[in-house]
Length: 477
Image 1 (cartoon, helix red, strand yellow):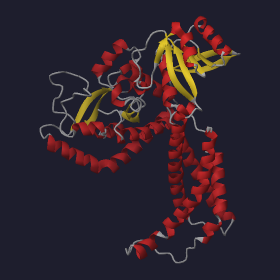
Image 2 (cartoon, rainbow, N blue to C red):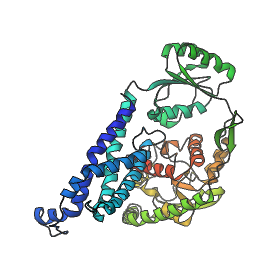
Image 3 (spheres, rainbow, N blue to C red):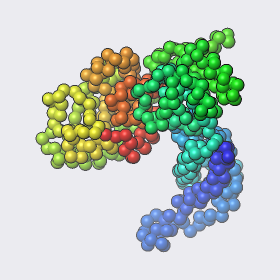
């Protein structure tokens, strides 16, 4: 059983759920009022005595066909790969459903017998996104579970000499959708600082000097060689070729996570291009506008919750302020005051100076303070920082000047984080959250990845993933 069986499952689900979606859309427009009046005995909504369902039922075939053709044109019937592929699939569903509804509305002008209620079309668009999105999400999860448990994945071993091999291990572990099952690593020396997100999955099999015994013992389907000199990896590659093992080699190149890279060829000569990230000015403006609008909408929607939180803070800790502002380093190193709901006792650092939160033994929280921190509700006032232009919704988390100076002494690239505005959430926050607080080098790697790969789709994925992490309190204080 391969992934194409799940593609077939998507086709069959659409064939089943598109007609159901049509009936739901018809009922939402024409039958809700009837249910309230005659079933619930509540005088709410309109009762339509003339709306017949037969025209919708008789055209279910053509509606389903048009809908599925639109999905096919949008690429909905293919295996999805890459970072947060389930979000990519949801985006395709959104595009395909929108295209299908537009085509159905156009079809009403060509065939007058085709039902064309604009309200039904609106409900069709809404319910189509929900039904297709939800069913595909659960099917995707089933597919991932099947991939992790099945024998379809190729067993993979990583051979490397530095921490860069951990980036590859992280991809293999967190993305079974790529088709590999990671079984362990062989290194020149044991790696100490393993990223939090793969601490439980990372396996050190042994040293590079004993590579032959480990390959003979584990017999992987695939090996990945990362940054080994050619004299070291050539014997490994030759042995793999003799024993039917696929070998991927990442050439040893100087690593600099502060710039973006891409492979190019110059008259058939392979080269690695290094360049600082420089998104177009128009994209930067659009991101600012989107952040501003979304922040304003979220503030309006959550203002009752924020008022309740403010009242609770004042009740449990009347001697201190409701809001707490702290100096942070923003874009281009400019300092600004970041606003939060206060979660600790007044003047918590008066005697100690700047210190990080002790994730296990912290005693400075006010009542409800730990809850506010775990749920990230204390971050809501930073929406005002976005409206002021100091921050963005998504970006590296702004750090305090004291810790920026401290980390910069041992991590030369740390100030590269300040090429963009800091964010309420970011790529690091969905790859470890508070567990990365005491691991600035790992956190920096995620931040620079975000800077080098930034785009609206990545921002959207991070926001959706942040909601999941907050709801389930993953890796929170």
